[in-house]
Length: 331
Image 1 (cartoon, one colour):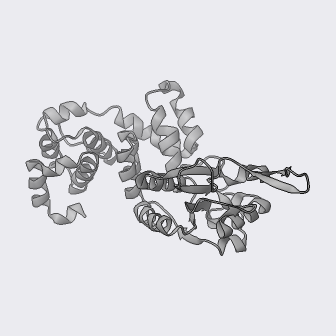
Image 2 (cartoon, helix red, strand yellow; image 1 turned 120 degrees about the vertical axis):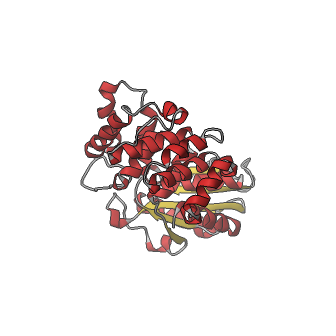
């Protein structure tokens, strides 16, 4: 499932309060997608990281008032009946397969009985879990069979186009978006024998925020620390090209004055820079310049521009371009 299909599916599961296990590659955006589901539904969200959980994170045993037995004091983070938590929400048990068996057994009871040591969860809450695929060899253990049998397993993966759309919505740097379009294999190249790998999460959280913030002399080391040396070297080479581009604002102001770059990497870099700056007012000038480039670059710019600012679709420049290129370019 791609992110949009997964979100729609999880919304249905939440309406049914059906538990699910979302399985996908490491760093692919499983957690963020489930967080987005809660945000779009307008419900509360609680996050638990299963590999670091201990039994006392669920409840602590204590003598009862009469000192004739043991009661369990439930962790106040859980939305049990009678608590101050909202009546509706999503509990995420992250990386569930990597938890100890004792924790998985407690989670299985939480999923099946919707209770912790006899204390019920509020009925409006739904339990979702995430886990890496065993085929990725990313430290994922085999999830206990009786836990898996109590949930629906939903496969998850994200394509380059999925990620680019998400990146535009979340203000990821245009030079990084251009690089991923230029080198799609670099978005997610997980190798279990390597300590650091390029993943969608690593690019978005580890690379995009540091560009033009850390000194350029330290940039390579910082990028390598997020995505590994190989991917960092590829991106740094692209970044050097991006930073030598003609001023994108001047290209927009004088589209006839600038020649089309010859190198593919420069075409992707310049296209990303122009798409990032696109508005309803300047889109006509941008597409005037893009008309001199191969069709696929114009499609890249148009898709990225309307994703960032949907009002561009209503401009005369966009309509004329779409009619000229054919409806298929918008699919």
